[in-house]
Image 1 (cartoon, one colour):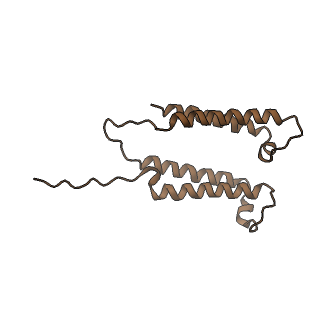
Image 2: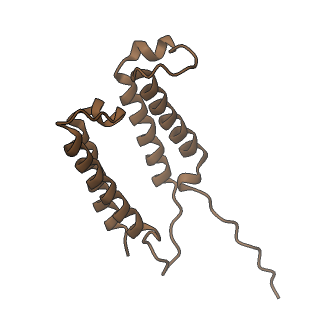
Image 3: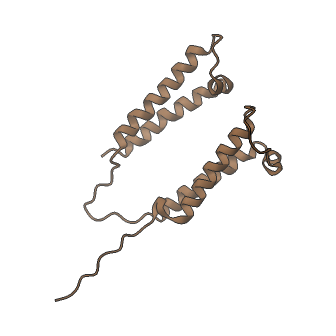
Length: 148
């Protein structure tokens, strides 16, 4: 009788330490620059000089860090077991939610665009609100491809 050793779970994908670190750094860089670039008069430390010297390159740095994290996560993801479902369990909910957020974003922008109402972020972005709303709608199509 042979003893079967318990199969250790292969950790990879978004559980890979490099993907986690780069993803957190990228999101942290994005949020930091977002708060330092918007004049909100929030209490806190002064803006670090290296961040202000980079200017709009901060968006690119945050994007590169997040893309690098995604590439590491996708390249280290374990192979699925034969016969296992490849779809995402929450794909339908994410698809509908993303489409509704995009639609509401665009409708809100168009509704307040010619009025005196000011919503802090939406009013400041101007026509970029259309890009953001359409981005959510395009993401909904991406989630639809993961629906099995």
